[in-house]
Length: 487
Image 1 (tube, rainbow, N blue to C red):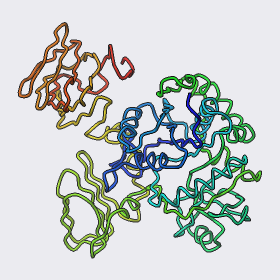
Image 2 (cartoon, rainbow, N blue to C red; image 1 turned 180 degrees about the horizontal axis):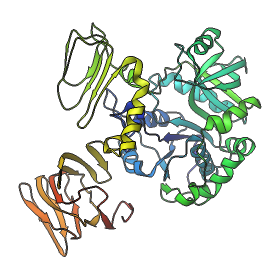
Image 3 (cartoon, rainbow, N blue to C red; image 1 turned 30 degrees about the vertical axis):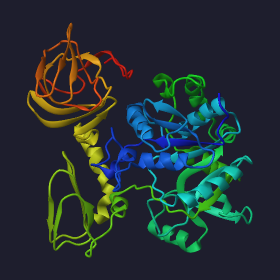
Image 4 (cartoon, rainbow, N blue to C red; image 1 turned 90 degrees about the horizontal axis):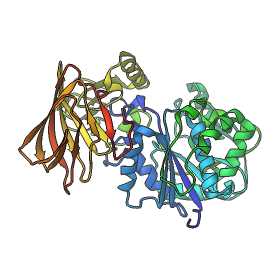
């Protein structure tokens, strides 16, 4: 294979982003949310990582359901990775197992001395020049065998972030690097105020830098049970040079306990004098609440922010995100209103942390809006639910050029397809035929069928499902070019 890269970014893309419901959902979490400029946090993170000197390859640890969306985002970058490895978790186990399996994979693929830069997929950093300088400093320290974390100088007594207590500086080089005394979990308000006043505390950014050998050895010293549980799953991955999509074995991964990298390794390593903090001068946000999203928009004269069609009468310091309808406010202050095709959130500024409880309650009720948007991305394109009622569902389906749905059947529904744009190549039973724009076809109950787009433009059609059950799980797959489960 080609010369190993000097630096390998490892992007951790997981979680449900429940504090940003209803834009962030379990099937399309925070990293896939578009920001005001239209770009997603994941795209910004990957572009920032690949712009670093020596960074050509990318390792991404994410859920298996997010593989195709992630791959499409990387393909759309101005500078895609030379090699992209996707380590696909069957279910989440927090950040320690994700880092461990990525390090074991990188160690086998690139060697012990490979410098890994661990980046959560949902952070926003605008000053990329200062970020690049901080990474170069961290990589130099990491090559000496240290574990490096990135600290952010606090701008306010934030109780929603963890902190790093810094001791004496390592040397006179810039940006400054300090020995880490300890990691501190999210503090109460009075303690956060003291941290800011003392000046020796930094926000814990959740970004790390170390060699593959150093972090694997640190797992062995401080979290041997995590390492022992992850090793069989890592060993079962395909060898270097094989297909980029690496599915982690569910049975092996099920034995892994969920725990964060901070708890499992970094806190204990700091107590042993093994951790250095590089304090960067770059801006940083984990975009973890609607307050943080609001700050990305310019306010009007009364402090109102937002996007979409809005009418504000006697309204102050209010954020409105409007997607489908006009949102009008009158005589209100300090509200956050988020309107989407299927859900509306109204929250007071002082209660934004409770938004996650809304998502939890919806999940408890089995309501689909905790998990899915009306528009759902698929590897072949996307579908949007236009209307649903007893015995029917109406969808808008868009198939990318070259895209193909699986050969499938449904036990409890039939389907009527009307082509709006493009030409549909249809398989229905033993028949194969084309359906042009302004034409339709019928797919009977329990008939094997497939929809394909052989054209160079998107295929758009309206699908009407009829039956006693129209849930998404009424599907049996017989053949699928994207290698999804058979049923």
